[in-house]
Length: 235
Ligand code: HEC
Image 1 (cartoon, helix red, strand yellow):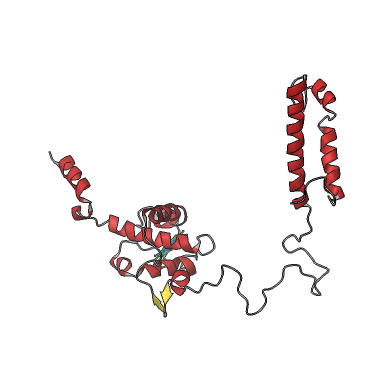
Image 2 (image 1 turned 90 degrees about the horizontal axis):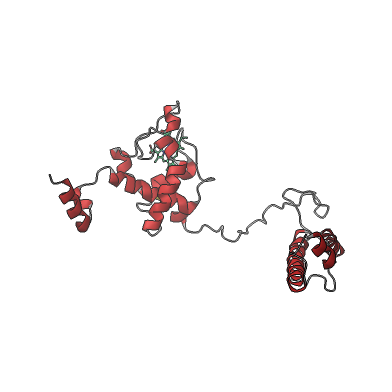
């Protein structure tokens, strides 16, 4: 970044620095007398305050310089391109950085046209926590928090989805959940725009946890906690 006030500093930014300095009551004697922009009357504190103010203003000026650089707003007209548009279509045959999406399983939930059985991401406690949060936000309004399909929107007349605990949905590959979120399913709209790829897998993993939670047996509980449960339950 160019040093503010140095050679080549654009006029606009420089004058805005001056304008602000003036507004702020520099010279410092005046500022001190009016009690604005820097502490009480008196040598050292006032000088320190003035120095701090100057540093802050100059930092602000740097930002200003970045704000003022030439650029197009989204969809702004351009006189450079013959069609008058500044937003350009992608050059044919190119892929934007980060958009290769070569991993079909990750981005479509399918490999070789078949739904993947398990989420193609590591299943961690963090992933499930994220999935739970995203599910509660995006899915529970219809599917409800437990997944029985009686969310508030449904209670007000939206078509009722099947319970996520029916046998068919317990058996489907996890890729099906990803596919339903990505492309929609019957009366259910797609959520690809609101829920990003990684979050869709987090939700898919969480649905598996939800399904398990409704049919858990004592054997699913880790031994340490099992004992606690058993003694708790004892009369
Ligand atoms: C606006 C209400 C609504 C929201 C929000 C919603 N769904 Fe649905 N969902 C439905 C409806 C309705 C169906 C049944 C569609 C049909 O059979 O036509 C359904 C069906 C499903 C099915 C079952 C598909 C099958 O094979 O029968 C799954 C799985 C599902 N949704 C997952 C989700 C997930 C995950 C989210 C959150 C990202 C979500 N839904 C958000 C309404 C919703």
